[in-house]
Amino acid sequence: MKVEKKSQRIFTRDSLIKKLGDSSRNLYTDRTVYITHKSLSEKGVTAQMAGPVIAAVVDEVKHSETGLVLFRRDDEVEVIEPPIPLSMDAIAEGQDIFLLKDLLSDPIVIGVVLLRLGRFAVGLYEGGALVASKTEGRYVKNRHRAGGSSQRRFERSRERLIRELFDKTCSITQSIFGNQSQGRDIDYVFMGGEKHTLNKFLKRCEYLGNMRSKILSRTLNVENPNRETLESVSEEIYKSKVTTYYVVR
Image 1 (tube, helix red, strand yellow):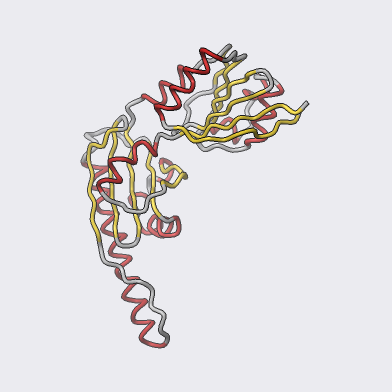
Image 2: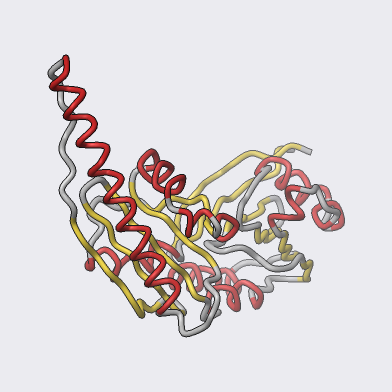
């Protein structure tokens, strides 16, 4: 059994629900399959139980940190990679989006840390609504191109400023996540900014280091970590990737 990718698009939460509603009215769906990240990584039996076409598509996709929702429609399979992890495997006849809608509407607590050299923004969201935040800018010198002792002094000063930025960001993150969640555990954490900077920050911030299992690997693409970005980033968090595969006969 061979399958090939036909198309791929990104959908917001609302546009995805609308699309699935249109599909339910206009397209025949043979079955719906939910597969968690754990089942994918451990090569569980759900894909095989769902049939050879679903199994072939899962083999083609290989990995998804959040799991997969698959809709089998004749010689096509539509695959949704949801924004947050699925909690269970399931196989249902027809188009069954109840688990997906529950996932997208669940009022979970999400922490967001946006960081670029010179500025950070930290936000806490409940059900997609921003409930607590803090933004701040800190001067970080640009790289120095001269050589010799002057450059070494400059680099030491620059590294000190970066450490101060990281430490301040970490402190604010702990304050926002720990004090503003009203006793509720944070379900997931998203990071945004430049990956190299974020990796260095995570190595220094012990608080977030202890939350590694909750930090999703998808990096939010942000240019300016500020309040305006925090207000709009919820839509980015809940975006899903939708890929269509077709069976090669």
